[in-house]
Image (cartoon, rainbow, N blue to C red; front, side, top):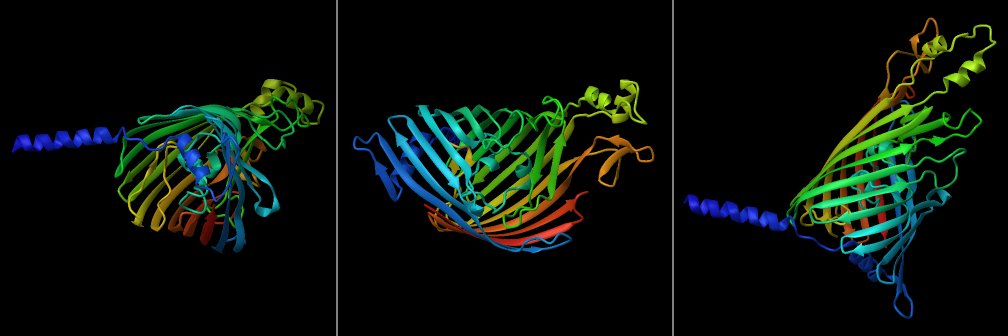
Length: 447
């Protein structure tokens, strides 16, 4: 009897080991299939260049249960994409993606990849930095209409850069160098970033997938120009997050950190799929270092009626521009009521989009903290001593807790319907709102 039990245990472990080394399509095959399955296709005479045109658009509607702020209930076009995919020669593919929502052109994914082999490639262009599973999930695949506020606030987003990706059965890695504002809106020097994501996948199988990973990014602050002083000191970093909706664009969490030098952000993520259930959770922390030009400020105040005559005393009065720390996390649980089991996208290190005909129920909780404060708050500023007017260099962008429930129906391969309810509890010096909730819906079509 004990021998039979031991055989069953060993057999189960062997199957689990074999399953952990199963692997589906590679990135090159995915790109080729994407072009091949397109309804509008072009091909050169010799077949070296193949192109596919596509689009994705969504119609959104939301009703807000206001607290203090008068939020905009109504409808809008959530996205209006025109996309071009291509494969050329033997090992290259490319994507060109623009969004025209709101009557403005926005660059999305514009990149090319060179496939070194069946599980690695080089990538150059404008695309999402490899940081956070939720941020890397396409708008066409996210489970809620709005991303978690913690991801909105801390994920780097898209920038011009170059990176290398390796995606083996057990290990997934991408790292690269990225620039800053691709539109040229900064008045001073652009910042730059080094960003990477590492994932371990001890189990990859049809019924069970386990993914443990983390990301890190170091970015220098972009300069505001020379009007406010030396370009080395006149820099800023901003963190913002809307409610987890798309119709109203109010940034309930918002802080612009002046005299910023650089920032370091780190992220831990856990993804699990077990049959028709999935879990996705991430924690993100951010540290901002600041650097203030005491010498310039001291010289500018000399000669005044109440000016300081010694720079050491002036520094004590102005206070320490200490490092700032912020954080946030979310946890998301999904249930495929119909449509089979969840699948895992091993190339991108994400939970794959459910199959057509799937009905999905998803719950999520999010916490985001953009406050790093001490001292006393009065009339829009922090003070060490209000009576003397002694300043305090705390930063307050607000704290939000949110919970939501989503129902998604994947009607056809290129059509899905989404219905969300979200509740947000807010603590902010900028807004008087405490409790806000919303109901929103989306119809999304993509070719």
